[in-house]
Length: 166
Ligand code: ROI
Image (tube, rainbow, N blue to C red; front, side, top):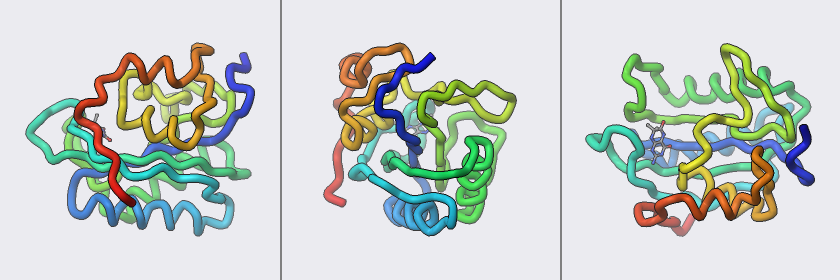
């Protein structure tokens, strides 16, 4: 079913190890320099308290909007390659700290559920560090349950989220 009248392809970025601002900056440059991907928009960077285990540094988060002729699974593989090139090590620990996390949030109006990929990304609802930057670049977004993104943000705790200047 079509839920979004102005569909786009959105990627969530997050990091909390090393130099997170630099990692996000480099990741955006990598995304944009890929032959099959064009970076259309990016949000500000946000500092956010960790969701999950609290014994880890705050995260830097952002969202970007791209256009691409890659299929969702191929886009995912590009994002995973960029994660690895930035030193991401896939650890057994769930919800642990990471040098770079790139999540395919939305791919137009597509619903995908395979072993490798779930789109819309399962971790959007209730996550202010995803929804607020997404709202910044696409305030008219209609979410998969047909509610405006502003409704989803109303359900979030925004107290531990700070917009950075870059
Ligand atoms: N918490 C925040 N604030 N930002 C993230 O990007 C993030 N990513 C994760 C978990 C560990 C769930 N917590 C997070 O994967």
